[in-house]
Length: 151
Length: 228
Image 1: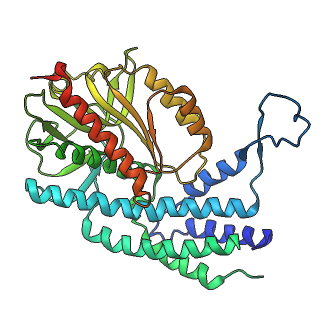
Image 2: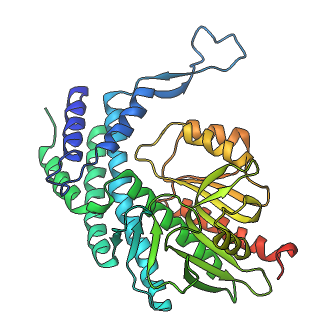
Image 3: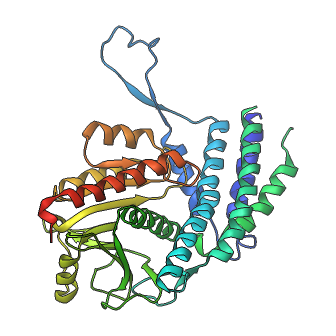
């Protein structure tokens, strides 16, 4: 994929993560912000030995800009982390509490509640297994996209 | 142009159906990750023969739901679930998610997952005070980042926290991805223990952490000062 194509695909993925209609009124813009922070900081590299410092015994490190390909791969990895891995963790966590619930006679739902707001976020195994299946499909597609970027 | 638009359309479709709308914020993903690590600690305890586990509420009653905090709070506040763990002839323990602990300096720190003596937890619930790190067996800072090579601010914070935690307490930095700067910093200072790639796709890394937790439990059981 050329630099220009990588930039365009990057932007399309950014648009998807901000698409409230697709995400039921929510957004994943924070993922893009985290990736952009990493891109702004640049990649840390060791100073190559062929530089003007080659006669020195001191070791130097510096940063370099990520290429458009590398930036796109960072975003693809971030989507894998936040969407695919999160869905798989949700399945594992809800499965764990489903088993614990059976043993201790506690309803298996996992609830997260803040001290200020009594409305809980409830996770259930039944919906988590469906989502994990979809996430595995997404994982395969992201793998394919990664291959096309690296080709 | 060789952009595979069909592939991107498929990704768009799969993305929408893979996301739990309740897990679209950074803090919600953190909460889930903490519950994931909590489950490892319970599994580690259960791997010991004759371990007794109960789920309890802050008010001392047996839990009727699995309810966890969305952000760190005081051990005595709210109606949240913790696990009580009893090993033969050892002082009982509790496992909590998202509670504040008092460091050596008496400054309060947030512990994403905490294993501590039940007697300390009871004193704190009865007296509306925070547990001391000297009474903790294990504490974990759990972080979930979307990109690899995330910044080192949290590693610096972790290093600061390790120096304010009692040496009685084993302190872990557990995260889902990798970062060269973070790992170089933590490896250089040789403080605390760090575990990266703790996600279902990296089974070997997950097993490393589970094994570490089992060792921590074994060490607790083998330590005479914790005899009941």
